[in-house]
Every structure is written in C-alpha cells, then in structure tokens.
Image 1: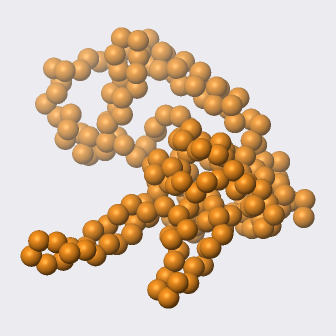
Image 2: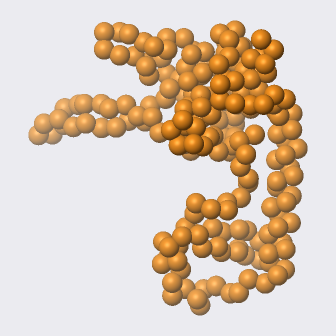
Image 3: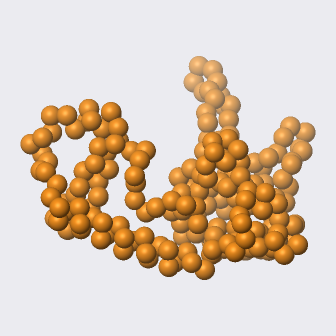
Length: 205
C-alpha cells in the first residue's frame, strides 16, 4: 500500500538477511565499511546457495504481504488530495477510536514532542516529552484555543501526516507499512481500511 518492500535495499549501514545456517551480511555505507573493517576472520564468502535461499525467503514474504494487502487496494488514482474526505467519512473511520495514542507511540516515524518547563535543582529545566496528535490537548494554544477539538480532526491529522504532509516536506510517505498501529489499536482501527474508505468515498462524491 505504501510502495515499500519487506526487506532493505538501501538506507542502512549493515544489513543482516537471516538464513537457516546464519546470515548474509551486506554493507551499505561508509560507516558500515568502517564497522566491518578488520572483521574478515568473522565472516565467510557468500555462496550461490546462500543468495538463492535469501531470494526464496524474500519472494515468499513479499507474496504473503501482497495477498494480505490485496483487499485494501484503492481502485482510483490515489493522490494526496484524495484525503480531503468529508466530515462524515472521517467520523466513520474514527467511530471506534478512544484517543489512547498507542498508534502514535508505537509508530517508528512519529516524532512530535511537547516542551515542558519545570523547577529543577538550582533553577529550572526544559524537557522534551513525546506527544501524541490524538490527544485533545495536542493542538491547544494559549487562551484555550484548539484548532482540532474533535477526534475525527485529530485522526485526519495523523493520517495526513503520514501520507500528505510528509510528501510536501520530504517527497515521500512516512508510513513504513509495519502494521504496529493496527496491532496496538484498542478500537481495531486499520490504517489501510481508513485510507481506502476516505479515498473511495471522495471518488463517489
């Protein structure tokens, strides 16, 4: 759904691909080269049967994921503007959300924080606490204003952060497709179902 694969091809220093008898170690950066320099006695040359086993494993996992995600394929040309769904559509995907923030805290790409000033020994200290955009206080400002007082607005923000805002900022989707948010959700909200519902309802309008 997010266009990724269940194994790394780039963006790593050292990657380990599991085999029945060990691992295939792949160096992907200068830092990785430095890390592995002088470790020749710890590794052996990769044989063809090793790479064949790795490819079979990768193909098997990829096929399983494709089967699992097939029902969530979007039948329209998906673009970030397709997340401009109606209030009813967002209310529908939020109906079981309890705003616990578990999806935020388990997401590998959530980075929002709250600055807290407090008295400390000898003066004051400022700490940066992990924050969640599903919390009602997340968008609260001085004077009591809140740009996202309703839960559907906050879930809207969370999904847009992964699929829209990150495209504007970095040119890529920041949902890794790991499924952790689905596993921990008390309301059994599936990010894949939510995006599909918003996009398809927009197409019907």
